[in-house]
Length: 478
Image 1 (cartoon, rainbow, N blue to C red):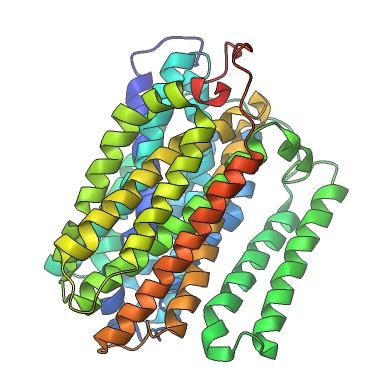
Image 2 (cartoon, rainbow, N blue to C red):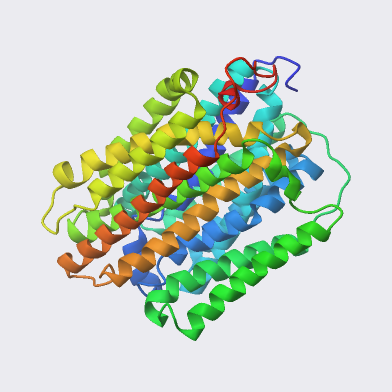
């Protein structure tokens, strides 16, 4: 089954691809509601609790480029299935964990599996719909909905599981899903050719270790001190490893990332938008969960249910509204407007009160933030993956997923440091907790505001009299 051979199965395959993206992103959020209970059971300290999230995201973001390269070389369908096998193993380890170290090991394995699934899923989508511009726009809308919807829905499902079962069942949930995915992939997914080429293991190790060290330094900075030798040394080490990664890419005949790809029109700007979108959005739901549980006293189920309106709004806007707005106003306008709407929602959330309520303090502001996420996500995603050459589809998919996940990890690490500096770690003190969460919301809003201005400066729109190529999705030509 290929893009040039119409098949009634391609929409079923798209549904499966979207479900995979839903599950991959849900894995970043489903643990949010369970964090307080995991902290008590596994002995996490407040400044280390965010590593339940970061261990997954750093492995995910750091290995996505390798996943995209392997997808191009070994075939997207093969890597899609391999990713689910690794996810299955990581989920079992995380579910059985009795200590913080074992738990983080399971999360790293889950992130590594996701790093194979995400870029191969986007490559498979382009194989199925790349030759059909109108269908591709719809396919990207459904795929784009799966990411933020999965992130927000994970909060609800995590609440249900934590409230009525126990937190290990959050990870057991992935076992039957992974098994179904492994069995269904050969039947549903199109075969993609493998290519000759080398795998840059050294580059993958350098970028992953550099990101992990940078996140580690930022998370521990409030405890160690921003000017301490430990913090500055870790940051310097992370930057040095990332610099080594760039040197490796320039010196390799077949690098993990062909740096020239960033000269592709629109690719760099779109990835910058995705990076800052993740950096603002992920801290929002992380601290909103903590506010609902630790300040308002919500249980796990109630906390998850409280964020369902965001999920519903995102689905409605991405599937039914965003494609029409892109056609009417253009990619650049929606990305900028979306980032600034997200910033407005975060600023509104910064006014949460120690004696607040869901209806007044959370609901309206969270809906504004969800509006911004929905407006900016699809156009920036579409611009990024449609800019590359067909033979570099896996690489482009890996880059854009990496941008979002790196932004998520660094944004959460930075906002965790900000929140802890203002009292977010003082359990039992509602006033201090609220002050810390408010500071984190404002910090995330600043990132979204900067993202909007950078979008204005870097995104170039095509001339109206220049027709879009026949094989280019509508979102990339605006």
